[in-house]
Image (cartoon, rainbow, N blue to C red; front, side, top):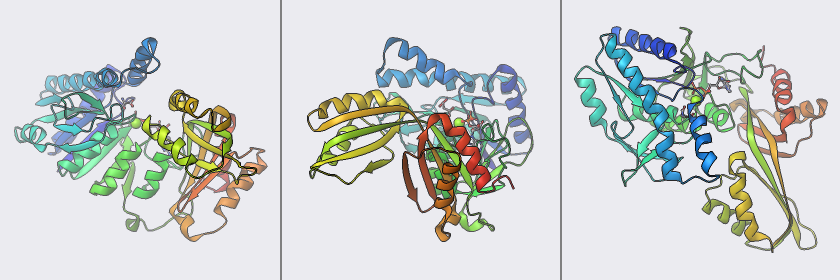
Length: 401
Ligand code: ADP
Ligand code: ASP
Ligand code: MG
């Protein structure tokens, strides 16, 4: 079999842990498999590099930023390769460029356009273990790009898809995917399996155990994806097609995203084209607008509220300056959280949303915004109640049972 194994930041967090990873990879090799390893930077490393850049600039030059950020993963891939060679295994470390990962030019959140299977394929034919630096690629101009936070998951899935791997294992610091973040709710239960769609919602809504784009790609390419712990041999969680899952729970999990800010535009001119102007201007600055709520206008004025990632709020403020004439008052609330309930079972059951609202009411938590889709309900609340809300919802939907 060809197996792709990805190790996250905590799993390669120090030299002893890298040695531990080397042993696990060697074991897989000893079982007779071909192995491509993808590594993250040591935990905290990417954040540290971002801080370094922010010492000089609030809005650092994006090409330079990607060159900087890609360095963390290079360190761990080289170290792991050195460790494996010392143990008597033939290993080769590759940067994104060397591994043939080609992306577009959207620095800091680049998309993978294609992967050249030759460099990794040839190394495997020579009997080598390939160790790829995650989270990075190369753009058409030959500049280094990075794939967005958590992007090593995407590297692993994309390689698994392109190389036709039989399995893609994402090794992390928890035993798999839980009903909610086990650090917030210790009663959270590990799931044996979950559908691509539910996992995609959970990941997109804040459950960072898997990067959302990696799940999307795994679904598209039919990659067999497993998340498991690098610290034990527990079986982990299989992410698979919905039809493979026999028992479909009404609600599968609760996700929390504390990295949200709310923008309220009050006294907006109520005329055709205004929303288009505002949101096009935001899109041009690559702001990721999430929830949008517009209230019914009165006296020629209306109110528009929307959420954006906290890290993009400075860009939003810059854009909004241009609309001083057509907007009465702009309010920024930087510390809001989005709590979401996800489950495919919602499609066929009513009352799921009502239960969420009742649970918030019982805890005296004010819901500031609501949005729903077929398989999720999201609520924006004050960040200080975020953990309380997650635990209350987890109990209300009996996810601990
Ligand atoms: P890695 O560095 O291995 O990529 P991450 O920190 O990105 O690991 O993701 C693992 C973390 O995701 C866990 O430590 C856990 O706190 C968090 N997490 C959030 N939601 C969930 C969930 N539903 N199930 C499991 N872990 C979750
Ligand atoms: N090191 C990168 C990050 O912290 C990518 C990753 O770990 O997946 O976001
Ligand atoms: Mg991660």
